[in-house]
Image 1 (cartoon, rainbow, N blue to C red):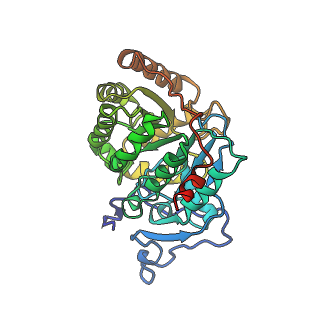
Image 2 (image 1 turned 90 degrees about the vertical axis):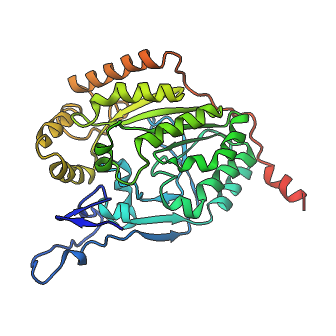
Image 3 (image 1 turned 45 degrees about the vertical axis):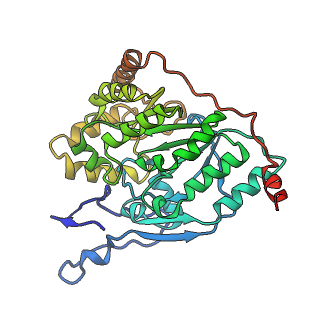
Length: 356
């Protein structure tokens, strides 16, 4: 539960609920003396259960680096202010702002649907990304364990799976990850945006500390589980100077690969981020906003594939150079992970049934 201090919702990234573009009506606070803000904003996290027909999503974006994804949860209590997935909450009838962090949609029956998918003779195995939209190890996973069950199903069918997370909870599943790694079926990317905890607490309020994320890399690497670091997103004026620090610490922890993206504030994320920026960094808000615009052709968002995640212009070029120099200095042996696609067995379910 979040505390409210001087109108600021502690423990939450977004401080507002933006209008859902699919809604016909909006709510507003006209008379403060008779309508309390509590009526408009509920600070508690609400879990909403749904029953999907499919769980494996075809990734249509050619610059994501994955062809399929699976997301056991929609919405994310981590509260990262910049999260591009915020916009998807509008399709569920909620706001991309506080609703995204407070109304978590849980998909039920995921394993059964996934088993049916893997058992199909038509399915040709390709790397599947866990957390392609929202973090599969967000707080509710500790209670429900859906991500763990997905990994166990991937191990059963020997299906390749990639993970990206900001949560140290991934270490809970070391036993399954170790087995997957034996067949070269898993790669874990840990998202680390800096080393300054005071920034993290504002930027990503309910994520694991930076110290714990480096510990995740160290633990995975020591166990022989392929892992890397995603320095993403880079926000000019907020964390771009942290690139060398993150790369050095990640390399020392055993990261084998690295990547980065530049922040882009598409859809409702623009006003959500700007409100957060003005409240947390009023002294440099204009400068940060303008530098983000400079990285995307004068706007805070650029949807062009191949350009949107790296940006363009002088600021984007300087970030790219700093990342490449840091990678060359601290990760000389970094290389792209290649999944094993030959171990997949779509008859694994039949073999299990034969035991009975």
